[in-house]
Amino acid sequence: MLQHIAAVWRYRYFLLALVKLDLRQRYRRSVLGLGWSLLHPLAMTAVFTVVFSNLLGGGDPTHYAASVLASLAVWGFLRDSALQGCRTFQANEAYIRQSPLPYTIYTLRTVLGQAIHALIALSIVFVMVAIFKQEIHVALRLILLVPALLIIFVSAWAIATIAAYINVYFHDTVHLLEVGSQFLFFLTPIMYSRRILDEKDLGWLVDANPVYWMLEMVRHPLLTGELVPLEMYIHAAAFSLLVTGLALGVIAWLHKRLIFHL
Amino acid sequence: MPRIQVDNASVEFIVHKYQKVSFKEYVVRGLFRRSINPQVRIRALSNINLTATEGDRIGVIGHNGAGKSTLLKMLAGIYPPTQGRCTVHGRVCSLFDITLGFEPDASGWENIVYRAYLQGETPATLRSKIDAIAAFSELGEFLSLPVRNYSAGMRMRLAFSIATATEPEILLIDEVLAVGDLAFQQKARARMRELMSSSRLMVLVSHDLNTIRETCNRVIWLRRGEVVMEGPSDPVVTAYVQAMAERTKHAVQAA
Image (tube, rainbow over all chains, first blue to last red; front, side, top):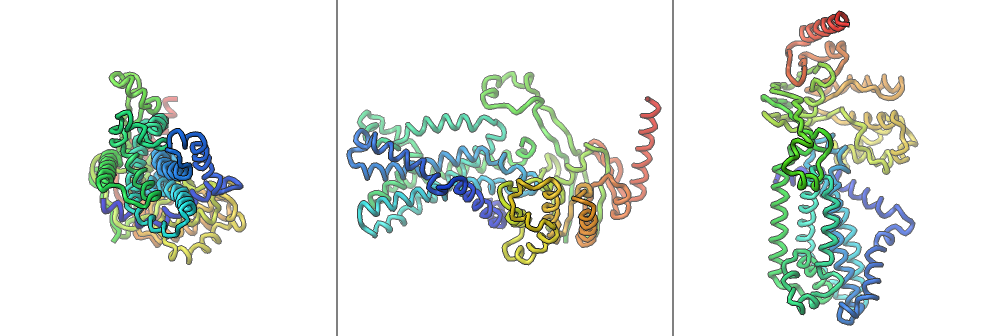
């Protein structure tokens, strides 16, 4: 484990150079650049706000829009980490066949790229909140996000690593994950508020959903300036430890065999 | 001190006979999968023992598919041994598959940077080398174009220039590479010779028996993943040549 981290650190220049390349390619592919790739969450937010803010959001469109955009940023980060994670080893096969770096460096490449993308979307939420509240000290709220973002990042890295390994053995993993993520999207209070499920006595569905904890840890402090209850942090941290443990297990089990299956 | 220690190491591949299994297939056919898509075990190396230290120049000879490249990849740490142990101490430079792994959309300059970092350089150490790498490749203005537009020869030049820019302790080479046009080939050969003499430990896989005889002090002859003979260059190469000659004679007689 420590050896692993030391190796990642030793090759940090390689890793960062590739992450930079990925981002540049992502944003250069179109005239609008950065704006183009943010257009998707922004458009989704706009549609949701127009259509659903009264129906599902409780009436305050600006609050609803900020909440949806924050949720979409975090949700998109987790989903894309898992989906892109699946393709990681295939995408980096040439490097894997050439040098004995720990494979987690490649999943880290995938996840870091997605993380920066998600942070850009979150910074837009922050600007929205700052404008609507017309207060500058909302900047303090960013500090409240640090533990949440750490927990989310570690979870995403672990999930991407697990997905990457499984996809080498079962190449349809990515399709199954796509279906699964569609399912989870509707199960998670992203475009609706949890009140709707609470009223039907389905609140437990939300309380047991790790994605919900992660969304709340980000959007609640960002929108209200208050921390979520401590137990939610504990649950989320426990979840991220669990998936990290799983990922380490998968690595210990498969990393010596992976190259023969690529 | 550079050191290679291989104890009783084997490498075994498991491949599926037809194609990879999908998860759906796995679930549906779970119980009968063996009969539908059998696993095939390929023993690429079996029970290899090898100790090499400072100053050793080891040649590896054998037919195609004898396990030469697999041995090299095991030493480079890319194939973990499925049995036994393989430990390598020292800064390794491997010269095989070097044209793989360019980022096609990035320019030649950028690819020099990525590859150099992959070989363990840092921005500080690279700064003093990058111009020499570019000059050696002779690619000039092409270096600012994306690598996807390069010809195979140009890629090879770039890859070779980067790969040989390190000061390795342990040098692993697969075949003497034919690089680019005639002028560049001579330059490349000179660079290789320089590397071979400056590296402190070398393992060379080649079909060119003269090169092996000249540069190596020990030779390993592999057949189907097993060591047939190991020892000083001359006797092993001679025995190999004899065995080949007999085999061709049998083949001619049979025909």
